[in-house]
Length: 193
Image (cartoon, rainbow, N blue to C red; front, side, top):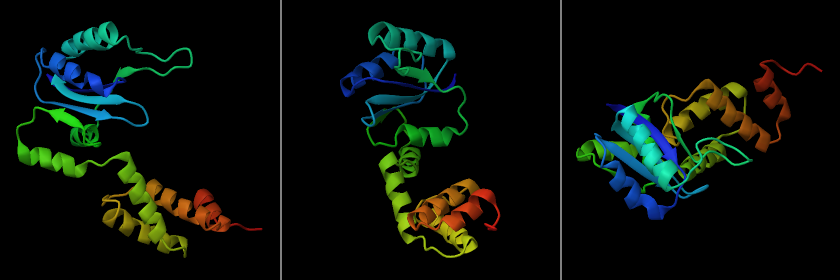
């Protein structure tokens, strides 16, 4: 058994059915998270065999809920599997991020840690707005340094990437209409005309 991450589009009224049916398979630890926005859907992270995932997918997503596994006719797919989980701990937090979730994890400390590391899309947007509000327009180097500090303190990201820092700095410079500095960041050189 390994952890498998997958999702499906369906309504909150199916939560009990999704969980109870899942428990009929040979599974280990599971997390099922519900999200209402931008459309109703679920994220699953389940310790199970790929064969059991295939059986569950057919029984629940295809036969019962009649969901599409591929986009078509201008419509998106309605269920799918993550091909490779890069970071299991981040996937756990991602699955429970909206706060409406179910799990069979018994370890209260581990669950508390997972919840503390999770945050909703709205929380991420709110943190980004706060960073932009506090980021002062000055030299690019000073802005980058301040942005790294703000990402760690407000964004709860102690290791922001260079591209993320530059993205936030550019967003702030666009707000300030400082096109010269935006050019310098995007093209890594000063404007010479």
